[in-house]
Image (cartoon, rainbow, N blue to C red):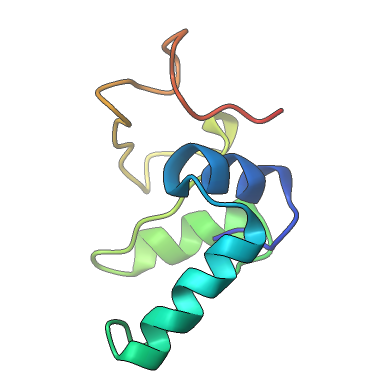
Length: 93
C-alpha cells in the first residue's frame, strides 16, 4: 500500500477494494482481531519503495503508476485489462 491519502492509495481503495480509507482500516482491524490475517498491508512511502519491496519479496503484490514500472516486477491485469488499455479500471484522479 501507498501511504493513506496519496492519489495511488485512493485509486486502489476505490478501484480494487471498493472501500474508503475508514472502511479499509475497519476491515483489516476486524480481520486482525478475528485471526484471519497476521498483519495488515504496510504503507510504503512511494513508488520506488513499493517497487523494491515487491521485487524483493516472493509473493508480494503492490500497485504503482505505470510510469514507475520497470523490468524488476511483473504487471498483472485487472479484470483482464492492462494499464495502457483505455478502459483500465484503475485511474488516478
